[in-house]
Image 1 (cartoon, rainbow, N blue to C red):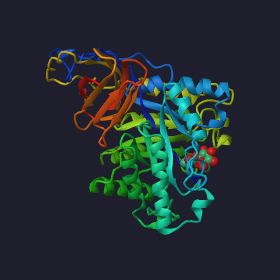
Image 2: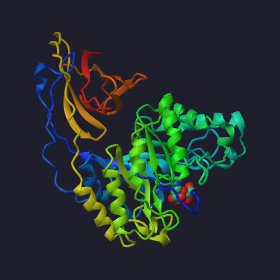
Image 3: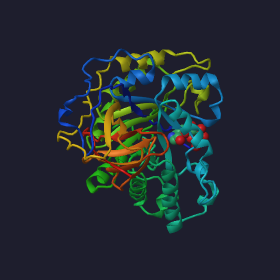
Image 4: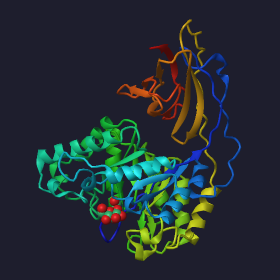
Amino acid sequence: MAPSAAPGVRRALVAGVVAALSLGIAVAGTTGADAAGSAPVASTSTAPPPGTTLGTAAARSGRYFGTAISASKLGDSAYTTIAGREFDMVTPENEMKLDATEPRQGQFVFTAADRIFDWAVQNGKRVRGHTLVWHAAEPSWLQSLTGSALRQAMIDHINGVMSHYKGKIYAWDVVNEAFSDSTGGRRDSNWQRTGDDWIEVAFRTARAADPAAKLCYNDYNIENWSWAKTQGVYNMVKDFTSRGVPIDCVGFQAHFNSLTPYSADFRTTLRNFAALGVDVQITELDIQGAPATTYANVVNDCLAVPRCNGITVWGVRDPDSWRSSDTPLLFDGNGGKKPAYTAVLDALNAAGTDPSPSPTPPVSPSPTPPAGSCTATLKAGPKWFDRYDLVVTVTGSDDWIVTMTLPYPERFISAWNAATTVNSARSVMTARPDGHGDTWGVSIRHNGNRTWPTVTCRPA
Ligand code: 9MR
């Protein structure tokens, strides 16, 4: 748990869903697009209308707006109505923590975590994984381990949880709250006592376990640029990026209250971390008393930093908050929108729109498929800030094998309605029918490239 004086804050701004329509281009037989390829995808030059929910408003600028969700509340229709309507990213508040997912060593339990994950996906939302390694929420078996046994348990836990959700999580909080509140150095913990390299081992393990997920370091009281703790985390991220330790993002929890108030240099902090080459996300936002102006300031700080992907608030209604007596959230106990809600919505809608271009087919013409072959046609699906979907339709054969190859550094995230395998780099996908017919889909993390895969089809 977070220290009482200064709760952690996380934020997660999310990449919104910019409905990117666009047409598709057929890519036949052997490769990518056909010369006509041309078929440029619809442009985003027309600004989308103002969003009427937090998620749609954030999506206008390619960001997400999320909330923490508690599995025990998914039976409360007032709760799910608001959460379903307003947010497009979900963080399980407690259900993916170590005590919940590995209550006995080597025995993984995903019942509650999957309830949230399934609810999120069924309602069109993405999921932030929270959290793999933390000094709190430790089951008793783990508290009795030390040294190499504890280090190995960490690695096994990361592998066990990440493999269950492989390819399905937007970002993982790999390590949570590893720094001391006052010194700028590491917090003492059982993890820290296994050796200073435990954090980078956790990140390297996580990258190998699920190359499609963004890997975040998450902490509280790192929003104020002048704080020693902020500098300590900044220096660690700088060290990691300079040495090639895989880290993609930093989560700023942003639990603001009278002891650890919002400070106007938060934007400086976000900018400075982003300049290291990582994304930044606001992952657990709540503000004592929910002052509308402070909420708007936090949103505007994120909007000012292109690599700030999105914002997550730490709960739906005030009574859902871990600090309910502070009434720190955007909805009151009756589900009513508070002034802070309107301030956040207005700030999101005042932002510029997503400048990211639409994904396009490759430029090389595709050879004519040989007689008796099959043809795989690609059509653009929705695109988001960080990824895009394609719909694949196969004709000419009922039992086919389609192979798609992505140019570097794009990565396959997931597929549906086909049986697929991917290589370890997630750049080559092989697909066969899985009983859902000949039309299926893939989700691709563009990593800045946005060129459609080349595709070949052959009868099985
Ligand atoms: O809100 C969470 C609360 O329900 C739990 O009891 C507590 C301990 O697991 O964790 C709270 O969430 C924390 C988050 O996981 C990490 N940053 C601080 C959050 C507030 O304490």
